[in-house]
Length: 590
Image (cartoon, rainbow, N blue to C red; front, top):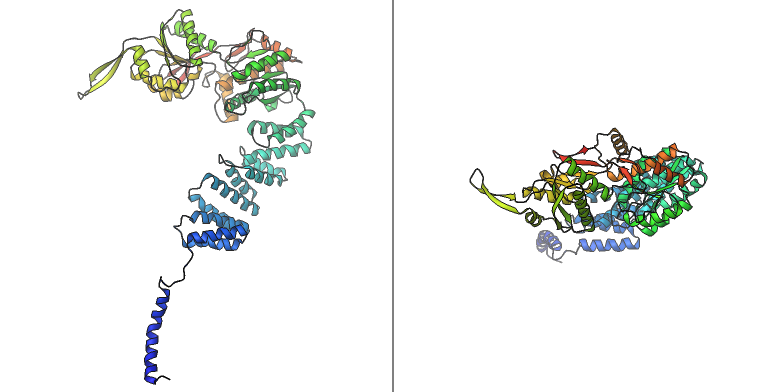
């Protein structure tokens, strides 16, 4: 036993050394190692894969809380969202997943986040918000979306009231869910025996949601309705509604639907087929429309590649076919084939006659692309100018993808540089063409022509620039700038025409499709309206009688100038002459 004096001294040393001992234990060299962010994340992944969600959630939450600068921060948050979803805590899942929108998300991760948000809104029985997030996932391009489509359908399949389906169709019109709701409404109307309402829904579906994976189901319902509910006349339509040419096919279809409307049922209805830009499909479509749908006439095809086979089959089956292709007929023995297009020869005849007779131009040059289109128009123009008494002094060819035309312009017009002093005595380059012509014809697109005209202006080339209907685009003025001023070209339609007939068409089209119609829409509208007028005003019972009506009428009033068809099936029309005046395109003739 220690003496009392030593006991007292030991006690004092104990009081002094005890805190030091505890500090020593807490120093970095002695402390127990704590898991870092990577270790916590890996543990979380392991627990998540084993289904131990609570343990996984704790690890991911620790990464987010303790390591806010970690590169795994957002991934941990995303996995927290998964954990909350599995644990049936939808509000927490929605909160944590929504925080990810302030960060960069890859397309695939974005789809996963949207899908999880939709799942959690389903858990909350909030169908509109679930559809909203699933729909956003479907809008992301290049990502697998079968699962999202399935989730949308499962929500809609559980919607049993007409009121709810109508609400979804209205709220998500144009989106995947809106179309599927419309299909469900059509199926509901069909079950209730209301075939007219079902047919209206299905026709809208075909027009607005073409290409969706539920369209085969829609076609099945429509086929069952068609068996019991036939219009008096069915008009076939063959257009490229899929593939690279589908935008043009859609535009033509909108023109047709502006003329033959759903309100024309039960007198007239449309049977639409997709040519897919394939001659085989076009020929097959003609045969199917005639033999299965019993059509009274066919509108289309649009593409030159499709028209020969389609026209030949229509001629064999003796059904009138009205095409919009500019391709010249392969045979003169096609009395059932009609062409409502602004053909190259029609354009050049109108343009050359106007240039020589009205504008009093005498000498011309041709700048044309090295393509079949450019060469064909160059030869046509040269022939027509000569026939009208004008003279083509020469032509210049350039490459299709070319953007710099300085060598061609300087070479043909023999451009001479002239130096002048500005007000400060600084020398400036100006140019003087040693060769001049009255008119320059350029058969190319509006964008390419805009480039050429801006460079012509730079080299001070004067004259009236002349073109085809391919000039009728925004690039002519936006790219050509002041160089496009005074340019003259031909087209079948001008949507700012002073004609009341055109103004009404443009107004109705804009109201229906929220955009202005262009030449394609006008041509297809006139073609469909022409056939509709025959069916409405004449006692027609066979395709041959429609063919006879198409040949007889010569006083039709079309927005594209269409009056009727000649013996060769070509459209009889008066094209319009358009001019760039003070930075705007205006109609100057007729």
